Image 1 (cartoon, rainbow, N blue to C red):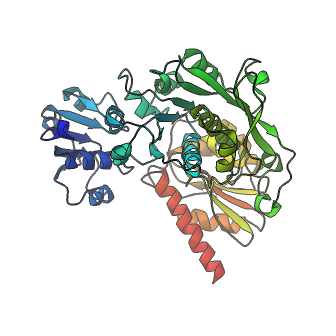
Image 2: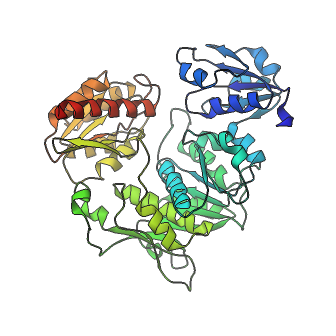
Image 3: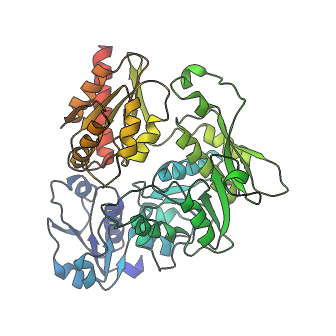
Length: 485
């Protein structure tokens, strides 16, 4: 773009998740003079540097230099960089990959945030749109920077953005984010090693509807106080989603969707036998006009396990309905939604044991949801680095496990005394995924479920939760091959 040609652009935080890489590529191709600076070294960042091979980019790694911020026309801030970084005080103008995208995108926007479930909701929306012969684009916190597809935006091409609290906080007060539909998933204690309270954490989530008006929709969770708080504050029209009928959770004058027990029998019980029958029999219904009919939105049989996933699909269905899709198209699209990698992702089976990768379960509540998604005996691999989470409910739930395998980490160090106090047995902690997987296999019998659902962050042993999930899948697949041989 001509605006950036010849400008000095400093990318603060290259990272490995896509945003810094996409920003560096975007500005280099736009003719800017690009400097990438990151506190991590070249060896750690080598995969990202390789992706930018051949582009005229200057790297300052292992440190930051004040001059790169003073001389920059624009500093592009990685979401993980703290807003109170003293280097940012030297910047004339601070942007992010999301803010640059929003300034130039021509597409109608659906935005999704929350603590857990937002990736599933965003991906399910994208899947439904694609299944109904609509081109759609998906990006944001889901590791795809929207700068990578900015030139594909069009008034007829919807964009779905998954946005983290950090990404939203960076947009506060800019009047750039005005989604036609905003969706807020479950709000749970998270990132309290970054935020000083739940209120400040949730405050960043509220930015998603900051600039909406009565031509927009905000989709709120009726089962949480936070959802009701969002509904009271937004200027957009409100639709709800709930695990129970809306007249019970909100009131008679509420519109949106709810879960209800279905009378449909399983067409192929063998495919669903590992899941709780009470979950399988849930379907999503909705009402979007006080005088209109009740609509079927989410079929009882879907490919992703868990009550919490059914609720996520319901949130996606309500958002799709607000966007204008008919309920029958939404339902057929959700029936074929395969799920999202690292979120109760089915890896495979051996010896009659089913293995699932839920590595993005980085808080105890998410690990509890994974445990509650199955009726079969569970061998759980958990633990990792600390996010200052409350492990008390997890320790109680762990009593129901067949076996608990712990990965080493600062969070595990804090979890172990709580498990001991609750008389919960465990193996480990182990300092490699190989040891954890081998131990889990020894503890499991035919008919059992093995899940990696850590309830902790991944740092220390792994670069991020995706590397942790990939390591688990690699070890599990090696195990499958050994048995096959």
